[in-house]
Image (cartoon, rainbow, N blue to C red):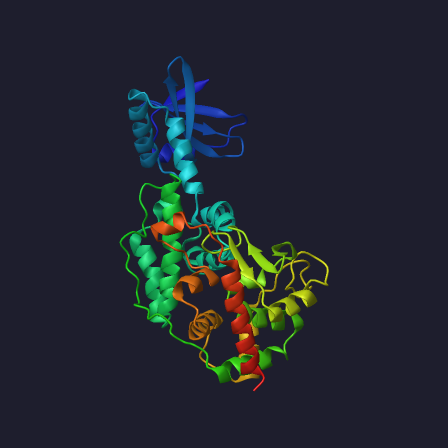
Length: 385
C-alpha cells in the first residue's frame, strides 16, 4: 500500500527503517515516489502510466539525490510522457552515452578500424592511450570538448614536445572522425584545431660512409635485427613491412605484399636481388611463418625498434638519423644509378594518383628487379671499401 505524504527534508531525515519495504507518494509532485527498504535505503522514483501500462524510473537514492532535484527530474519526465516519449528510453540512452567512455571507445576504434586497416595500428593505440586516454579516459565521448583537447596539446608543447603534439592531434582527429562516421557523435571536438608546430620535411640522406658504418654495425647485432637492417638497405621498403616479412610472401624470387600488408593498401611486389635472396635463404630455414623474429615471444615479428636504434647508434657512431632515412637513402641512390622517378615510385610503393594508373596494370617487375640489383651491387661496393 502506497502512502500519500507531503515530502519534506525533515520528514525524510526522520524516516526509520521499516520491518518491511514501504512506499510513499508525494502529495505536491505528481508521480514522485519514495521507497524505503528494511536496511534504511531511501530511493526516489517516478511512477507513470504510458499507454495502457504502468512504468517506473529510478531517480536516485536520498540524500545523494536531494528532494529538490528529485522533484525537478520528476517534472522533466512527466513532460516527456505528455509528449508521448517513454522516459525509460531517455534514461537508457543517457546511460548508454555515459558508458561510451573515451577509453572504451578507443579500444573499439583500434579493434574495429585501426587493426584491420593499418599495419601501424600499434602506433595509433600507443599514442591514443598515452595522451588521450591518460587525460580523458573516464569521460564520456559526448563530454569531450575542444578546450580539453587543446589542454592535452598545450601540455605537450610546454614540455617542448612539438612534434609529439602534432602526432597526438593527428591520431585524436582520426579517432573522433571515426566516431562521427559511425554515428556515435554528431560533431568532432577535434575539428578546427590547428597543428601546434610547422614541421619541416626531413631531407636526411645517409652518406656512403654512414651506410657502411650502419651495415657493419648491424653485423654485431643479433641475427634477426641484423637481417632486418640489411633488408631495409637492400630493398628500401617500410620498416614495419620489412619486420613483418612472412614465409608465405616469398615466391619465385619476389617478396609479395598484399593490400593488407602495405601502408597504402595496394598490392606490391619487390623483386629480390641476389644479395637479398641470400639473406632470405638463411631466414627461411627456421620454423614458423614470420622470418624476422627473436623467438622470445613465439612466432611474432621483431619489435623494440627504439632499443635497436640506440644499439645501432652506439655501434656505428652515426647520429641524427631515423630508420625511415634508410628508405630515402635507397631512393636517392637509385636515382643516382639512373632509375627514373616513374619506376622509383613503383619500387618504393608510393601511390600513383594519376588517372593513367587506373588503366596501367603492368607490373614493371623486370625493370624493378634490374634497378634493385644495380643498387645491391652498388651497396656491395660501399660496404666493402
